[in-house]
Picture (cartoon, one colour):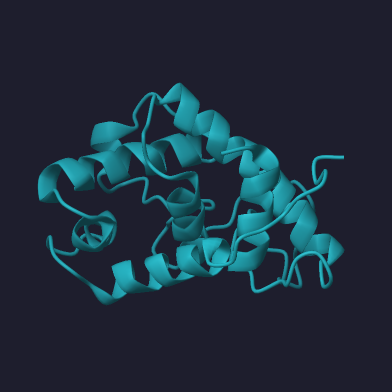
Length: 172
């Protein structure tokens, strides 16, 4: 998958109708996420679908890296942190399974966060097997098998890839 196609898929996952309603903030966010996801998949030698990785991030954080909506938001002030200490786009828990699979990564940086997400997804797939519907929930600590979490992530992914697209030159 090319960076341009992944950017378009992420925009669709955000609910933006491409190309007519592309909001600058959405495009910038998608353009920031796509190369990080593709690079992380390459470094980890992963066969996961880029759109699945991005869709999970969309479910976890809406691709926000910092607390953009906060009254106290300042650029460079730190990464998005969840209510239970989860970090970044993939909302990785530093004290959870990341301690076992991601000790060599800085999960507070986008590249380390996404690489850790990919490792945890591989662990979930190895433990549960089958299709993503059976193992996506394990990312959050659910048992193997279909889950509401997996259904949400797969619905977000479907929104990003459901319509064939014709691109003349999106990368420009």
